[in-house]
Amino acid sequence: MNARNLTDFLPLAGMLEVAGVGVEVPGRSLLQAVSAQFIAGQVTAVLGPNGAGKSTLMSLLTGQRQPAAGHVHLAGKALSAHAPAELARMRACVAQETQVAFEFTVREVVELGRYPHRRHPGRNEADVVLQAMQATAVEHLQHRVLNTLSGGEKARVHLARALAQVWEPLAGQSTRWLLLDEPTAALDLQHQHRMLQLVRAWATAQGVGVVAVLHDLNLALRYSDRCVVLQQGWVVGSGATAEVLTPLCIEKVWGVVAHPVAQQGEALGPRQYLFEAPV
Image (cartoon, rainbow, N blue to C red; front, side, top):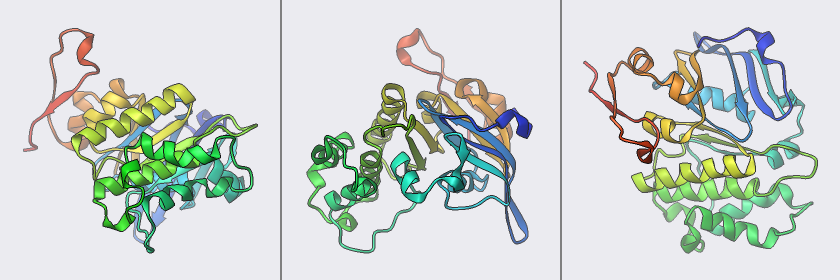
């Protein structure tokens, strides 16, 4: 359950991983000796209370921030050793907050996802943008200016952009990645489930690796294969989600009592919790 030795996290092809990473800011440590592996073809949820270091860890995985200690590897080599153009074809990111300064339409924003492929377009290039918009149910908004949309609609547009970016596998490259920082935060209940159903389907059917920062523990239990739980910059739990997110873990990390929902048969799906308000 605790952070493991660096030797347990040798770089492996097809994986995204951090080994002993630390991040410091003046007067404060944001991450401390964090090690974790993210596996292609699986959904991994990054969980923890506010300020635990979730978005900081995501910034290392996307390459937006460099660790003060430790290493980040993608597909068997250091993340920093990949050329930016190569990374843009291998993985797509959806940030927690994304600002678009110009009056781009929805379609133009989604088309930006294909920019890394402009010199080597795919066989179905003409259809990718429309299909990505259809996948996130924003095709009817394609001629609207992005900045006129609701927060939830914008979130779905940015997911469509990310899907368009990694829509097809690349010759000679075995893995693609979706890195999502709080992708469900602005979505209503229906679209939260639809978004996570979609990325889980991509992981299962296409072998895409998905890493998502989530706050809803029941969504994590339902849709993620694995999870990494952070608390005050440390990894306090890592592994299969159903094994890590126990009532004891939830009470220790979040200070909330969790009661498993009684289930009758498998039709109701994965375990879920009811939560008491913290004392």
